[in-house]
Length: 206
Image (cartoon, rainbow, N blue to C red; front, side, top):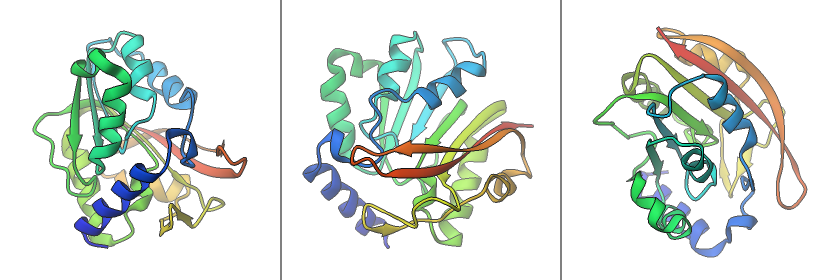
């Protein structure tokens, strides 16, 4: 798919589905919050949520006292929905409309968090571009938290193909600059009751 096609696809998803109707909905993103908390970073640490859309992660991070938050999504509609929900708190967040594969940050981050955006990149070029940009965007000693569908997970999501990963294959993509701290699989239950198996890796930049 071209970047324009991807943007059109995701705009249509967010324009036609409610927050609680998308498969990735979580009333509280407890796993991501726990993984971030375990890093033991100060509240002034800079965090970016890749493909964050209108998820509740930013809400909880703001409530926890984090002061340097960015959210990226290809869908402007998704980000607008999050802004409306957060109301005045939205002014405390840097909102970025961009394709995760092509995003070139102008600053570095202590934490790069991606729950289920990376697996939508299915071409070698997009994967390589993401790895390069993420590596450059994360500070030395910073962290990459990334989740994808596992080899036992779905092969499609929202009507389009995805790329499955094991802990080993996911970590291997980043091993030139990152050390793997933790890798595991976990189940996510969708609003419809379906079970999706995810691979998660937590890595630290050397």
